[in-house]
Length: 288
Image (cartoon, rainbow, N blue to C red):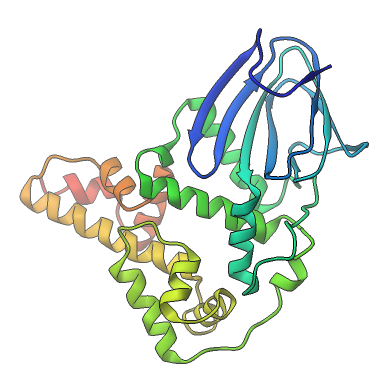
């Protein structure tokens, strides 16, 4: 039995280090690992290859990927050919993001259901990360804005799709605010599209709670605040591509996408085509 850490005979690869950490770990041998309770963080385990079994607080968890919360001890067995992606999220970051929805800080860190269902939205995020890590390309590392966008996307997808003990409270409807608040939110998105923007930032600019902000965007604009922000950023990316095509500026679609916080280039291209009827490269090179 051993403890989780840098394996002497295996492999350790740091993939991403920001407010959230990501790494790939393997021990190079069949191993049983005891991970002690950690009051300050959550850990998400996604096997990339090989086999494994996980027990949390003495109970086996039958799932392809799992989340271990603060104050939870886990015991893990990994096969000789294993490789596992580990995502480390500080508990304070989870609590701060959850507070945006609740309006007040939670009394304690949320406890998530440990098994992550294959058909959940968050499982889709993990699948995307596993494919990106296999290619060795993490597009959200291209800029600080892309990294921030990735972290916000991961946090909100986790809290929105993985059941936890605040899920019911988070889903409670809130009252609508004034049209002026919605206009303030839209103006903030348009003026700060090139910066690292969170839901909390938009709500603060609108002078409403996050839940009220989300209700207003759904009720009046039939979208979400972050989807609206993405639309604004897409418009800026389009304007940049048009301007570069007209002036002959030497740049790439990748440069423009990452500048405006689009971490997944394939999704950026699809969204761009849906909006403007052609690919980003057609806009950039079509008139040259």
